[in-house]
Amino acid sequence: MKPEKISTRWNVITGGPCTGKTTVVNILAQRGYKTTIEYARHYIDLQKIQGRTVEEIRKNKKEFQLSVLNMQIAEENSLDPNETAYLDRALPDAMAYHQFLGLELDEFLIQQCHKYRYHRVFILDRLPLTNDYARLEDESEQLRIHNLIIEVYKSLGIPLIHVPVLPPEERVDFILKNT
Image 1 (cartoon, one colour):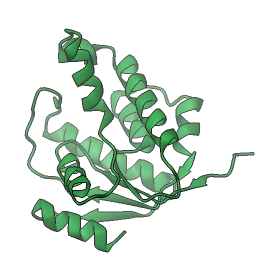
Image 2 (tube, helix red, strand yellow):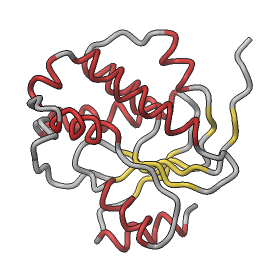
Image 3 (cartoon, rainbow, N blue to C red):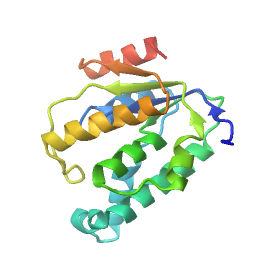
């Protein structure tokens, strides 16, 4: 028997690479809302401080994904389920990235992805791809990851709200209207 999902007031801001998630989350934070950071980039930044290159960090895909997953688990476990928060990605995103990278979906990952019932999941429509030091995907990979994220959240029975391409402040207004 599966344990009961923990209902939350958390709103997930997600989508493939380069959809404007972090920009939207930063605006929400500036407006005084509780937010979280995106842990893949945070992990890369922490490793770069220790002298590792992005290529070295991302070479072992399983280690990279597990490190990011553990940070995300710690973050979500520290949040109050009754407090409204906006998450820059959530645990189910890890399932999509595991699928994208051809990594096995182990029982621990699946269990973690079924732990919480998110209040709303906002899928940001894709913007033109711009790569930087942490984002290495090409446009076809961007689209594939985006679609995998949508599939994962749907497979978990989580209703999705698609956020159209608008100026960032208007995207935030759209999200707040639909929270």
